[in-house]
Length: 192
Image (cartoon, rainbow, N blue to C red; front, side, top):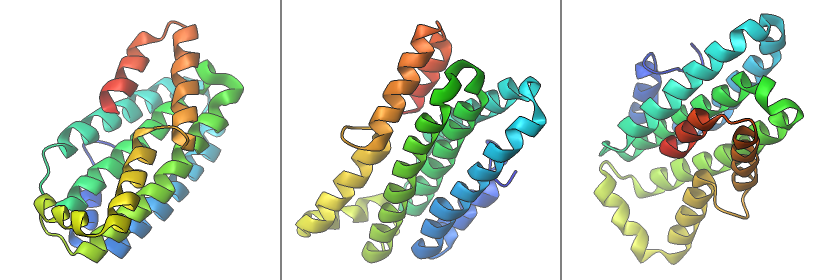
């Protein structure tokens, strides 16, 4: 539950949207990473029988959070939904480690590293803008440096090259397609 799976993630969204953006950055980057690391260490103890369920919960969280996030007007709440979605993707990857084999750490930590840096940066920009509505982010046009950083962080989250998330998602899709796991590929593409 500390990983805030969908739909039990309402309290996490309230933290992201109600707290100062610095706290949101800390919760998104640090606690999500810590929670993921704990799940990574506990998965071998749980056994392979749990892998599918962790992957399924992760997929539901990834899709549900990202799709509901598209309807948000509050920037911090939107970033919160995105953070929960990324953690869902990471849970899905851990649950598919029997399919991904020794590529699992590369894929998971490539996505985690990009999420960690990009989400902290986006919350930092949100704090600088003091925006209460997504439309207030248009102020970025007046500051070329912040606009460049914003674009960089968004491209890192989406998975554009040369960011680690690109290579991680590429490896994920290639491994899944080699094993004929097209439903999981659809989940990754729709959620992204």
